[in-house]
Amino acid sequence: MALELPENVVVSRLDELANWCRKNSLWPMPFATACCGIELMATGASKHDLARFGAEVFRFSPRQCDLMIVAGRVVMKMLPVLQRIWLQMHEPKWCISMGACASTGGVFDTYAVVQGIDRFLPVDMYVPGCPPRPEQLIQAIIDLQDKIQREGTISGREFDTVERQQRKRALVESIEPLTLDASRNPLLQQQLSGLHTNAPPLGRS
Amino acid sequence: MPHTPPPLDNVLQSLASRWGTLDVSTYRNQTRIVVAESVSLEVLEFLKAEGFDLLVDVTCVDYLEYRGALNRYGLVYLLTATTTNQRLTVRVFVDDPTPCVRSVVPLWEAANWLEREVWDLFGIHFEGHPDLRRLLMPEEFAAHPLRKDYPLQGRGERHNFPILTRHDG
Image 1 (cartoon, each protein chain N blue to C red):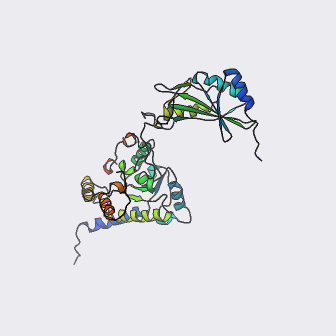
Image 2: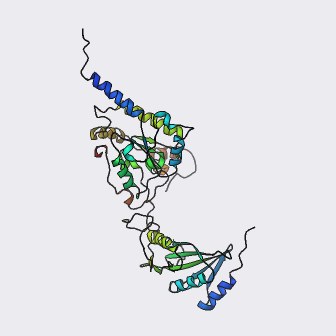
Image 3: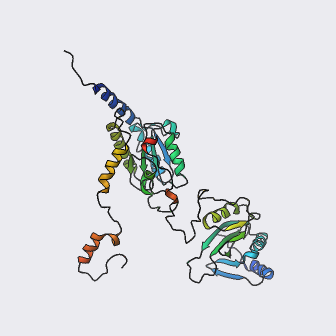
């Protein structure tokens, strides 16, 4: 008696196979603008070998890559170049924002530095650090590999749809954003005023 | 053993004999003179002939909120004589609304990019400059960011770009 399989078993197995192949042969496009680029080179060097994970070749041509690693601060003069390189990459493609400057602008909150490339590009993985250690970058690549394995090509889930983005955003925006400035944090001010000290409260009176 | 440069008295004396009493001040072995904009190019030409063959830097200070300031912009010319190791700072003060000085590119070629930088970041126009355009900021940038009335985070130029989503490919 023939075993009756659901129709999409073969296709989903192929899907998994394709994802497995893609995740284990990620060719990075190193978009290194600043100091994080040195740590990127260190990650590719022999001590923390990135080639172990399939990222053997660091091609500098976007036509031959599928993973763009933006390492370093991106200034407003460089951003159109970055966007053009991203558009020149073939799909499926992923982006890692390496370091504090690429993720949020880092310490450089100035007129020339873009405060996070995710304002203008779709980013899949963020690596905090200034600069992040090579082990952190390797962890980010491993996490990205898990993400690639989960999201398939047949179902198209590797391309975040607008609905998914909106659902994710609804989760985040319902929570009160944390204020990092102590003078404007109402909870902290309440706690401090409750303390029996003669010191004036923090911040401007 | 570093070569101690001879004192600048001869140079300052010859300057004073040509242009009258000078505004000279010294701080920690650094000598600076203040010259008016009307004679700045002639003074610098004279100094180059006196042996100050290296223009180290051209930069500017914005005295907008400085106590006791009389003029808004103070240009700084750092000169060095490579044969005698003497160093001299020349200050030229200019004002709004149209700060303008004559370019020293005919004297030192290095001033080409140095003056472009000052134009880009402070807005001081250099007459006679062969190619006065922005150097560090993008061409279409509309402000002069190192002025004191320009905010550190800018006026929104840094985020004025199209957004690429996953769908744009």
